[in-house]
Length: 76
Image: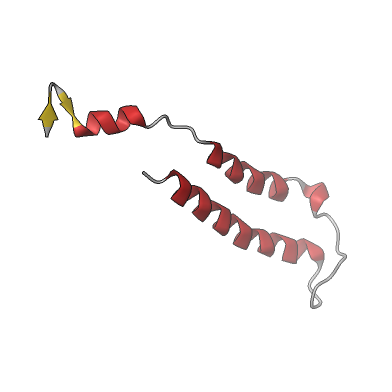
């Protein structure tokens, strides 16, 4: 569909700025997992699993939730 030389697709791409403050939530998950001093320890253990392992697995779940929040918050 065209209106005065503009298509609906052109208007959609112009409205989208490409940046949202929601994207900062994605940075959080990378910083806490890629900074070893946060989790470089064996204690406290949980159900016999050292802290290093359950901390990483916990962040898999948290990262999925944060990614879903960012996706739905920035969805057009």
